[in-house]
Image (cartoon, rainbow, N blue to C red):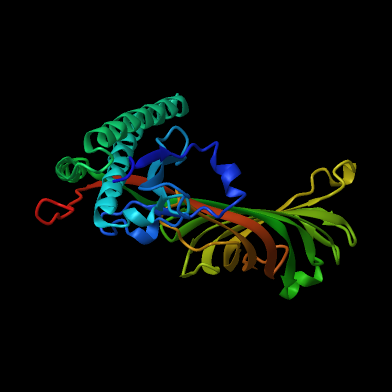
Length: 384
């Protein structure tokens, strides 16, 4: 070849300035999709022969949970928009030379990922990871320089073929560690909003409709949810009544604490919506809002009964499932409707219709496993 083929590690500090001039076009290393001349997309440099190959090693550590080892991803990239091949070097030997370089980068990327995984939940993970990344680039740079020197920049065909065979063998001996995400069965959600309780039947003669704020906590195991939903309502007594020798006067302002606890099941779940019918138990405590009035300090009314309802969550944002994410989460607008009867008829009979709307979120952490895969790259004859 007319000149030594150059292999430059693209420093991350250089990328932002260059990105202002051109769009970054990258190619991930692949065992099945080998380099092609069309991957070298930068204009040929005037007066220069040979080729130039830009690459980068990168990693990402995704947090999984408190005091848990992060999920590790590592990448071996070629910058196609910066790499070029001169007109006089557009041949199979140039491709083979640059492919060996790309394969060397992949080998060191795999070794780096294995070291990062071995760190586990190290308290000094960030510092250790930076040191591993630095040493990896240093070792890679040294081996690239040795490869360039021994092959004469690709001019020594026999040495290039020997390197090609050795690198293919090393790719097989250095497993490709795949990061596998599995959704946890356990998930957590919450919501907050407002709503109202509408008396149904005879109880409507004693109580006016009430309004207030609603909260909710959801704990999921698989598709089954444990629901704990407290609600704080305010209203007035429509018609006075007596209960346990205490008089509740017409027009009295009252507060209602409504607590629903139950089990629900996700019967429908899509990227945009989910439907959850549930069945549980409801506790209602009615008390005067004016607790400073001596007449009402002992007033309190408890009522409990079964409850059944339906939750409809309308998801928003980008909720498409992604296998490369360390969590599976989304935001939603929730509409809730439930009904509970007044069973004992003292002092009420009938039922309560509970309507709520609010905003919430739900997520499941994902478990991370790693699977090692051998890479087999066939070579014809002596290679090249």
